[in-house]
Image 1 (cartoon, rainbow, N blue to C red):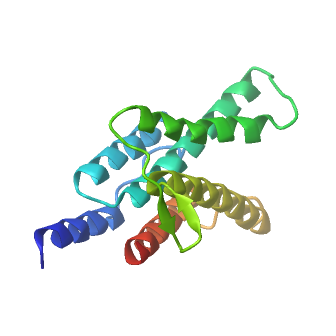
Image 2 (spheres, rainbow, N blue to C red; image 1 turned 30 degrees about the vertical axis):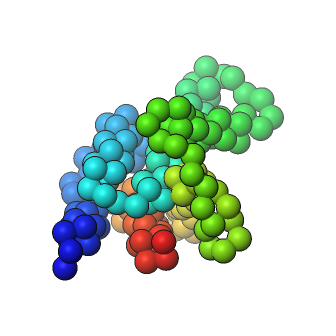
Length: 170
């Protein structure tokens, strides 16, 4: 096994390791941990599309935090949440102002986009869909989660599965 492949395998196994959950799934500590995890993944040689996937989920989470901040202050207007989440995910563009060059590639044979940007868009969609799935599952279960930290497990598992899919396909 080459050293690059070994590093990728170790990074993927480490990503799936269980850790003790001790906080709200969208708490500031968890949010910072996700951001740090993205930096670690890049340094381990994880493909940039996977880094973008997790970055997109992180930025979506930050958009949710901003929506909660606006709720607390009574700032409500039509389309606010979509606007806040969209602007939050659009912050991935600032990555291209630094050390990252915009290098579009053909993805899936018909999408011509930078892999980080593609990953961020998919990460946003996956995170939003898993949040909606959690709310639906909770509603079907009488307003209760099926197990502790279900709200954390669903997006993490979904993102891990998409990471594996990206790894196999790209």
